Image 1 (cartoon, helix red, strand yellow):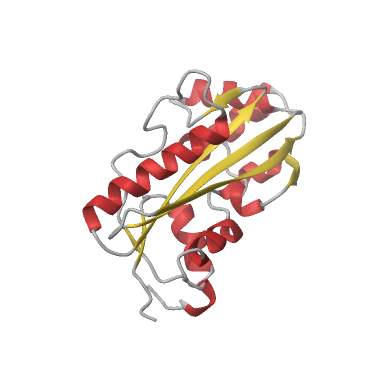
Image 2: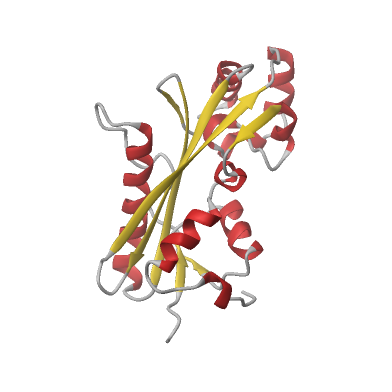
Length: 202
């Protein structure tokens, strides 16, 4: 069987690093939508929103590349039905962090794989609970000053110094980073692609 080209419809260095980690052969072709590319629809649940955006990103790139399997992903953070995207500025980043301090929130990543030649799509989502320890505005400001929160949903990166704010997680760690790898592998297998057979250096 010919192994199809894998295309990542994202510019995220974290998602690319995760695919490199599992030795998946792929190329990047970022979607023009980017993160927070479409507004949440009235009454739309966070998981449905993440799935919809992931599919929109993958479908957009699939229409351009014409061949291969296109991976789209969208990560959102939600707490008490409030959605936390990427902060617009440092003040909003600090406000996000203080809203999450001492509480458990959910990180949801929608993942879509689209077969470019046919338009066939497989979509799913992973949900991970993340509990942050209590911290004050001074500590939140110290973290915001690092610049790390500015390009991340929820204004923190668990794989970087944001780990210092996290007390524990329930679920897939890689989902919190931005791409649930076990879920992605399951979606690829629906297209007859075995990730174990795709090892190659990019």
